[in-house]
Amino acid sequence: MKYNRLLAEFLGTLLLVLSILASGGDALFVGLTLAVIIFFAANTSGGHVNPAVSLSMYMRKRMSLNDLLSYITAQMLGGAASVFLFKMLA
Image 1 (tube, helix red, strand yellow):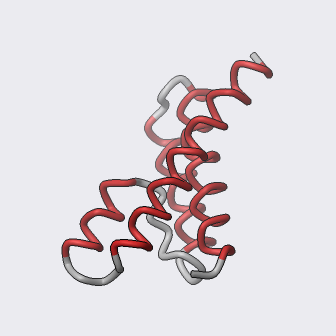
Image 2 (spheres, rainbow, N blue to C red):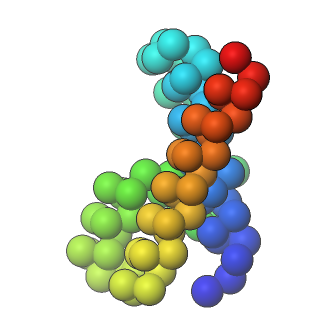
């Protein structure tokens, strides 16, 4: 697996969760942020940025188990890093 896919998932999830935390859950802001993340990550990793999306791709046999576990790990680390950053900046 290419590491740029995992980096895209990590950064995409980090930005998504950070936008949710920073905006207080404003749906329009979060939705626009998600659209931008998917636009930029779609060609690299598919723009999943959500373990549920990655799991559905695995269940439809569009990704391997190894890729699924790698994506979910990158997404979980991205989410955890965003909470850490938010607490540092808030």
